[in-house]
Amino acid sequence: MTQQLPAAVLWDMDGTLIDTEPYWLSAETQLVHSYGGVWTHEDGLTLVGNGLWESAEIFRSRGVALTADEIVSRLTDTVLAQVRAEVPWRPGARELLLAVRETGIPTALVTMSVHRMAAYVAGSFGFDAFDVIVAGDDVTNSKPHPEPYLRAAELLDVDATDCVAFEDSPPGLASALASGATTIGVPLHVSIEPGPHHTVWPTLADKTLDDLLEVYRDSLGVTA
Image (tube, rainbow, N blue to C red; front, side, top):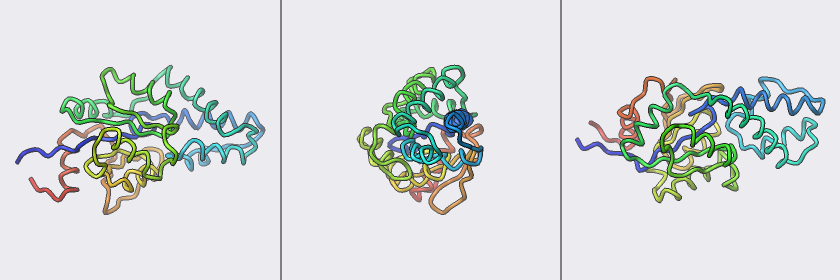
């Protein structure tokens, strides 16, 4: 059978390609503590996958006397400094992404981090990793709204329903599914429950391009 390829593969960043959640939790804790508040590990987990500006309002409710833009900028500066010191790659992420690129399938980075941080990570792979980047400051509606994935598909001039998306969080998963993309969840710090409309992989470490294509073909109802 001729191999049927997706029109594009769309990748979340934080928690999917790189394990930055500990960086974010540290930055959030420092920020809230600096205003005399309390921020726990469990508090941080509730924000995984959320938009930064939506999260900023939660920090403001905890006593952080800054504007939402100032909060996003301060958190990004703190996390980006840690990423510049060490990019915490998730096992298998670069290898699978490289296999996709070598096949010639277009790719997009779809993240709720701001564009400057996404661009730095995109430039750290050691190869031309993405055709386009859609970041949190590039869209009006954050995940779980489908806009980020629909925007990525639009920039690539493809239909989101012909794409495969990778996500690590429930908000991200909901965003990708709502866009119509074939969606693979790779949970890390928060769980993703199995469901009839998405696939869950425990890790990317043992996954190949053939595995990705199998999921895509299954979503189309194509049998080998």
